Length: 162
Image (cartoon, rainbow, N blue to C red; front, side, top):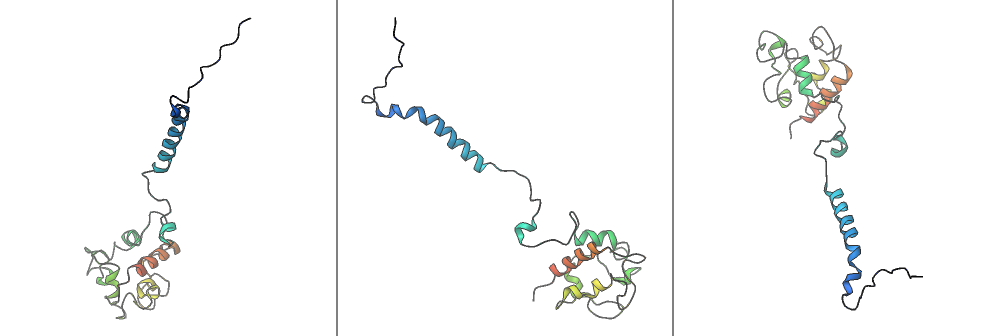
């Protein structure tokens, strides 16, 4: 009867680090995987940026105050229409919303935007059925509540610094 062959015995006195070598590869692989997992990232954007800025947006996704004005107001209140429609007020020229704080309404000579209380500005009252003077804007229609809230946020955010 023959004896089974035994694996060779490592002579640790000749090379003490030889006993640790079999563990180096798995540890190095584990370390490399952990490093890769923590440093790899996605090049995409934030789906909910308001979570990181501390605020929430009143605007529907993909909508801004400027896009609402472009869609709802510029047919009468554009640079081309100035003087012929829209009471001579140009919403297309640069400087909005800050320019609303320095421009008076044609029908009551009050500032279009109130720096003390921007959310109560005449510009926003013109979007209601009873604006106080003149007709509700946009002419022949009304703006939905979401767009009005978005414009309110846009106007408040554009308030000039004192």
